[in-house]
Length: 240
Image (cartoon, rainbow, N blue to C red):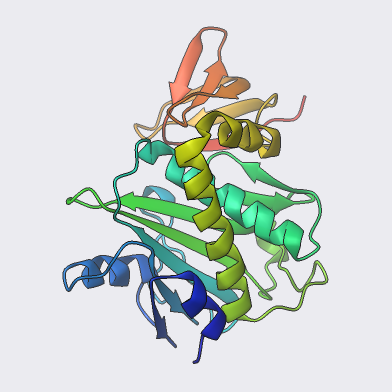
């Protein structure tokens, strides 16, 4: 597939009709000289990776599977997932999708339904691969998901990848200059803040409390009532 719009945004673009995982492929390409802001885009993943070791599979042509390499030194890697999420929100707004919100740390929801998931992985050399899965047309009502098609947006893979990549590049530049302003924008976009939440920690334990803020490291602060800073884990919004 030709990807002229994405080629203008990323330093290098690799396309695969089908692949095991765009994140894994980009990590493999790093060993052969992939450069900062290289991208791998696929029409289908057979072993896509989700958070906490889960699989993230995507049928052919129904979603955008995009991975982006951040190899330049980044001062606060904990914020890369959050910046990617904010990039998707801004790209969706540019496509006419209003009301998208970020569920900390890595999901985009519209009207309570998930439309995008993000996974950032730190590699041994210190590079970071940011994987983005955006549902273009796949129907998954049983999973509480939606798609751009259901939201009235008809967009091809190349245009979607380029829109997200352009916003991400701009946010990375802005973060280097005005990190406090970007963090404020994220807090406004984060629908988790102010919610009563239940968080399942990586060790299997749970906490409940009010999600009060995202700290300078990108961690979610939960008042239980004592302050707990969460860097990883599943978070559910609880009804009052």
